[in-house]
Amino acid sequence: LQERSKGNCLHICDAVRQYQEDGIVAIDDGQLSTTSKGKLLLKNVHDLSGLSKGRNQVLPIPISVESFFDEVIDTLELEQQIILKVASQIGKHNMVYNQTENAGVRVGAEHGTFAAAEVKDALGRGKWNGVVLSQFQKLAESGIIIPMKDGDTNQPNLKNRYRFKSEWMRESVDNRLLYRQKDKLWNIMDRIYKEIERELQREALKHMTPEMEQMEGYLQVKKKSNKNSYVKRFCILRHGEIIEFEKSDQRVVKTTVSLHSPVAELIVPSEGQNRFIIKTDHWSKPKSKNETSLREFEFMVETRPEAKQWTTRIGLQIARLREGR
Image (cartoon, rainbow, N blue to C red; front, side):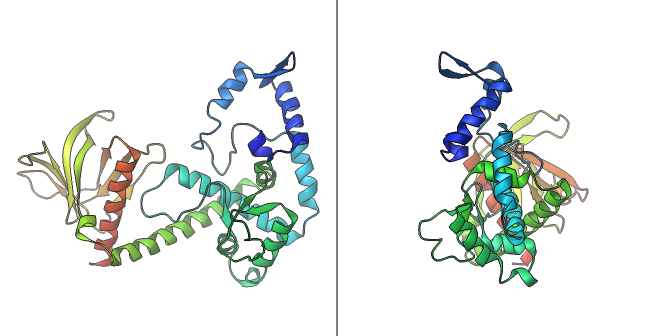
């Protein structure tokens, strides 16, 4: 409550009263405690995996607090209200994106933050070109949004990162958007970030070293015949191929998965951060002809850093092959 209200005592008191009525907390002899319902909610209060464009965090914003923020929002200029609506979705999009850590090179952005450049790109060019930055400065001066670094309010630019002073303010703004509006904004953000990733990948390709070309180690490879069964294989990534060996002595090749295909794709399921999928129509097994049927190969590793290493290098190799290098 302290974190989400930014220390506003009146908002905290109203929240406690509402959560008491909702059966989330109880007060006994002046002591605040969570009920069984509250413990169930708070168990995953820091887990952002359930956060989405249509859903906020598990603890709802108190009705009275939302009403207070609604009155504040209603006094703002129309352009400022529009900017805040877009910023609320960019902040949430960054939370979800950073939580899932999709494959590829990702531009860094703190959880829940946004920049004027991102808002301007989401709104489109044209009349917003000279408006966003000046309105950002007004919103920062009013204390509705605050810069992540001291001094950024006095020297605003498109790249400075901001956040809502109160997460409940962001939720109040979020609740004013229709689902189709959220869908549109999230689709725009997905497109923008994919373009950023492609640009960073192209830049990384210019500095690619032989070490970045290769990767080896044990992976859990999903069996095609059993959806929930994996087999441990020693795998090597080199020259645009993932070669599965039976053991680390590299004597017996089981499968070769090729990235040399126009349809080769790296997929990282958001619900499984330690696994990734290669979709390709170029693959082969020993003593058989090269296959051209489209197939998905699923791999799993022990830790997230390992998964990040594999997916980053695979992503770079696919990008390099697409560039024809």
